Image (cartoon, rainbow over all chains, first blue to last red; front, side):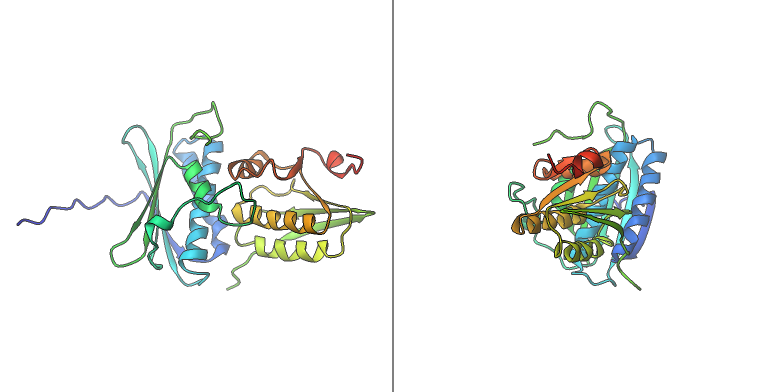
Length: 159
Length: 117
């Protein structure tokens, strides 16, 4: 039986690899903000996308690598033209694989510190998909339209 | 390499009023320092604590978590907590987390420090 042919994904427009250290978050945000601006994204939407990416990286640092500053994280950013101009952001790590069913937002009615990252990511990004990587680690793929919608602050309705 | 970023914070103590003014982004690199400073400050505070966020252009959920911890400590110690002068960007994080109704948030420092309100 013939093995199905797998089409390799094209390389990302921009790749950044860095250590799992919170001190780099500011630089990543500024770089991503500049990229989004160059791609024509509305500044308010860009700020929200930067927050979602910050939260995703924080989750890798804190939960994936458990605070180990020597883990590697890769950020891959691309502009897609499927169904209109879209920003695709992958966050890849080599941390322990997490059971995909356990990655979910917590009950926001409970006022307590922590556990907001997944909710924030899901609230801001239009597509969010976690998967296991070949060879170990996790991939978080997020997408957000590049087209500006100035009618509201959020790309998604609340709820 | 130091994994944390220092958090600069001005402090103004008055009778039954403590005003704290953090400066800079509050993220996973700086929130541990902010948390430590706030814990130390509220140990000797009474009345109202105002966190003036005018000098904070960016906050992520680690910053929000730090302020939720502060709110819980204030409630336990019967202190009032007011946040003021949040930028649109910072306020939106509280809105996304649906915490904007949990905190007392004031637009101006004058109303935040008015202890008759």
